[in-house]
Length: 88
Image (cartoon, one colour):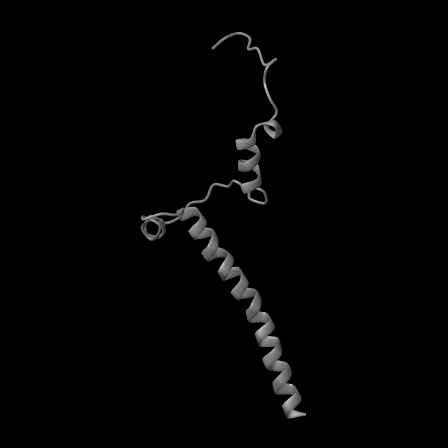
C-alpha cells in the first residue's frame, strides 16, 4: 500500500452511470447477515439454478408470507363482523 493516494481525478458515485444504476436498483434494500438452514438454502438455490437469484426468491417468499399474514387479521375481522350482524 502507498502512504498517500491521489484522488484529485476521482468522481462521485453520482457521476458514474454504472454506480447510479446500481444504487437505484438497491434503493430501499438493506444489507444484513442471516443464518439459514443448509437444506432451505439448497432448495432456493436449486429453484434458480437455470437463472435468477436465490436471494430475490427468498425475499419474494418472505414478502408473500407477510402479505398473507396481514390479510389473515382482516379476513378474521370480516368473518366475525358478518357472524355478529347475522346473529343480531
